[in-house]
Structures are given as C-alpha cells and as structure tokens.
Image (cartoon, rainbow, N blue to C red; front, top):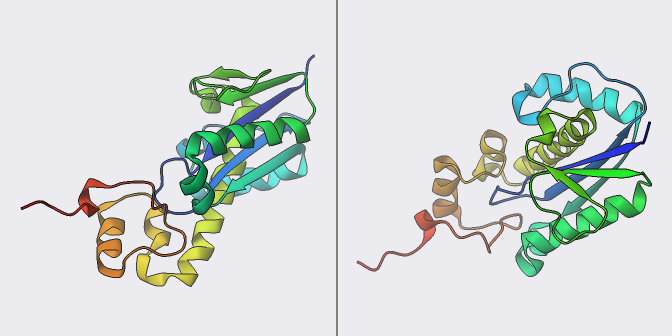
Length: 183
C-alpha cells in the first residue's frame, strides 16, 4: 500500500486571519473523519487530538500581510511546496481542482469528505485556524471574531465600518459593502 499525504486548507475565504494549510499522513484508521465543515466544533476538536497523536503532519500559516503582499494563489503554492518538502510520501492529494503549478500533486474536488487523509488535513487546518482567530478575538474584542471567525458577515462588515481595519484584516480583499458610494 502506498502512503498518501492528504492536504487541505482553512481560511482562504475570510477577510481576516491567517490562511492555514495542513498535510497529513495517517498511521492508523480514525473513525468519524469527514470534511471539517460538516463536523461540530466539539467533534473537530476531539478528532484533532486523535489525528495529532496518530499521524505525521505539517501545518503552514500565511499572515494577512503575506496574502496581501503576495496573493492567495502564491501563498497556496508555497504552502503546498512546504508540506511536500516536509512530509515525504509516494502520493499527495489536495482538496480542490488546481495544483497551483505544483508538480507531483493530485487534486480531487470534495476530497475532504471522501478521503480520510484529506479529511484529517481539513480538520487540522480548520481547528488551527479557529483557535488562532479566537486568540485574536481576545486582542480585538470590538470585532467579535469569535462569532464570525473572520468571514465577511454582515456583523463583521458593520464592525469594520465602526472601527476600521485592524492588524489581522486582509486589505486586498475588497468588499462592496465597504466601498465608498459615488452618490
């Protein structure tokens, strides 16, 4: 049996916080793995502990400044390359439909719900992202990051309108709701 390294990310879409990517090679089967978005926070946390104790994994983070300076695609490409350099394996599978120009990488749409190793990577990335954004919520309570995890919800946009951007906002992500009107 050939070893498989599953790779996924969390935090591509939010307007605040880090992009987190994870690669994971499971050593044993873990029951209950699935796309992290389909699991409750409590279930993700419990699975996270099982995964980190019974796998090889590598987690990469890109700051909002890196995303603004280099672009999300460049960050994703660098993250894929770093994971592949740090986790030696016969096969690498990334959730989605593009390799971002990285050789030796296969892709599969919705792999995070179909392939255990990618599900595990999805959970590692999501739990890491959410834990980090909750730490930021304590530093910046006025933005209520604990409620929206950095996504561009109505509440988050209202908080930006009221307080302006903070250090962890991605200024390159443009929101129509924050653009000045011409009338």
